[in-house]
Length: 155
Image (tube, rainbow, N blue to C red):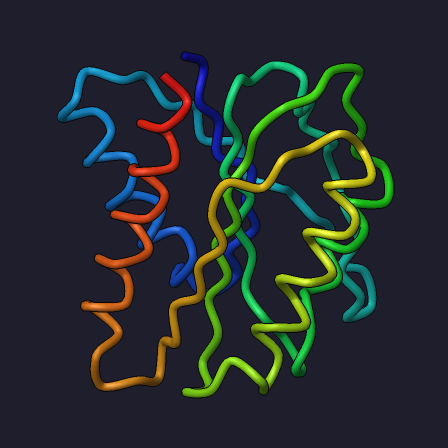
């Protein structure tokens, strides 16, 4: 199975969870390709700098931080231009600083799912890691387990 991570991580929090997930999958002998969303920051405004192709993967993990109580702008821009010519399965990972999902995490998941489902995606897992929570390491572990389980279900 060809597994890809398409992600944006400004502070490194989202990336750190993805690296743990990648390590877990590689221990099982799986190959994972990590594809960061690049952006240029012109006059304080972030704009998408690349357009990774979802069609390259059988299973995609799409990951993003919450910024200003909503899905970050770079991921919003990517989801506007991303497309696939075939149905694909995916999992979502969102990181946010605040401790409650209703402060942006839930709306980020809904936004991502709506856009990705419209292009032929089939969501297999949704996860949120609250970076400011005392149990963030446990949340990250749960998120990793949920995504690994979703990948196992595809075989």
